Length: 226
Image 1 (cartoon, rainbow, N blue to C red):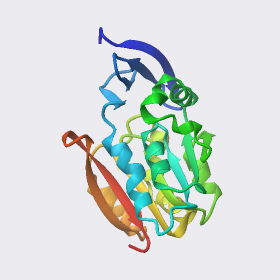
Image 2 (tube, one colour):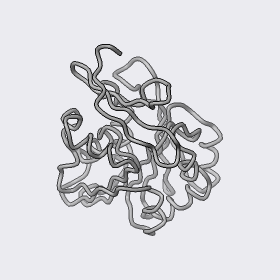
Image 3 (cartoon, rainbow, N blue to C red):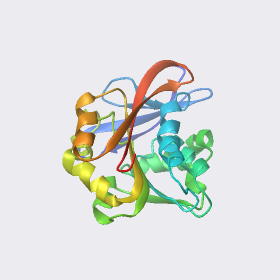
Image 4 (cartoon, one colour):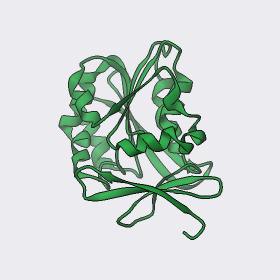
């Protein structure tokens, strides 16, 4: 990592771990300070783009869509949603770690087009679970990318979102024609089945992290009306 500049650290609430942001010549990446590889990179965001775009493309009317994104990351999912919805849309992004928001408002944001500056964007600093519990029948799309998938990597507090109780809370927050989407580093048949047991019809998409090569990630698209 001699060619990378360490820009800062951010504690992950409830985990005893931190995220670290690094900058290279032309890109950035974030990793967990306690070890492991990169969590996300400005060079590899194909599946983050898909998490934002795919559920929005299922909407019959995206002009005034209300979208909730769980996890800001490097801003690519938010940017993808904003490209798919209309000028009357409301897009709320919930991010637990304040430093991640500040990183996106800084030079990191250039890579995703500074989507936090879009007037349709609303930022909630805190747990997306609070928003899921707070509104019924409100969101047309809920897109969740808060961890590595159903098998949490960063914090066990994320486990609730992948539990039956969390799935039902998300379901109750959706409009009747709404779409619930989850990002994961890989497939998980048990979670796929859990979505189905909660009453969803489920499509599982496999998306490359970058172009048409390298790691493949999983996106579940769940709806009550196909």
